Length: 359
Image (cartoon, rainbow, N blue to C red; front, side):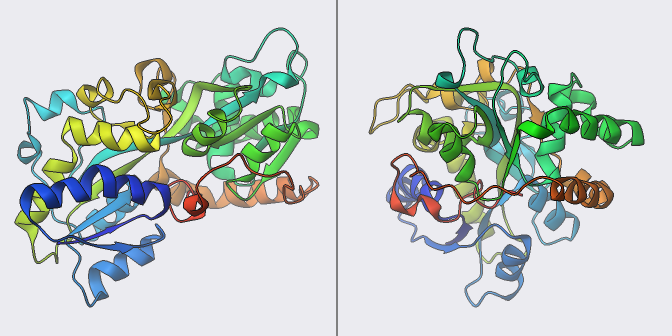
């Protein structure tokens, strides 16, 4: 069986938690195709690869696009039942026409306690409050997620955010929020930069990807995660319509989404399982002994005010907002590449993962 998936720390966790146990249990030989997450890459693997792909691990946006193009096999939700009613156990949005989400990763705000005296920020609203919480804010040099973060900080509810942003008034509100803290914004382009800046004290608060926040926070205990207003996205399993081993692919997916396997992968990655029953099984990281509940985007205490990122919405509505943001960002002084060293991590963490290739 041939599986197309991400590399880096995420791919290593899959190997340990899913691929090796499945091969041992079933005797199936598994080969992997590592791709960078770009939709054109996975489309080429499905349509043109000399080694046909049986299973793909894709983002939610890529899943929807490939499904609409007829490149993925529809999945019957009833076939996903492993122990009880899967539709009750899976978190909202996990099961779709052509795939099933296994884990969620997120962008969240992290603050450095050393930057604040007294009260620490504990809600997304602190992002826009430079009076009570002074200091630089490191935000993505991209309209996507940045505009959502400032609207959440300005009081827009997650359930109505994209409807708001689609209106001229909503777009103006987002840019007015950015203007409010314009003198305190540092824009980052590389996903390693925000954690480096907040650890070094260059930024007091930073928007970063949850996996990198985890790796930084277990080293620097001064870092506090603000899960309030997190923006999460999903990683999903799917079967190409051209897959030669569809039955085996479905057996693998059913195995990969069992609570024990989801928990094992989450334990290694800090990504949040998309099944309620799996969350309770995660426990501590096997190597460093850290309780992982604090770092899971889907943990109940972390997901109370979460926004699911809508890639399809940006594809349909994003052109004008992207151009407007680029013009706005051009008026800021671009930050230099961070010189402080990153918190210690595995050398291959820079390899492709769902987070490193996020917009």
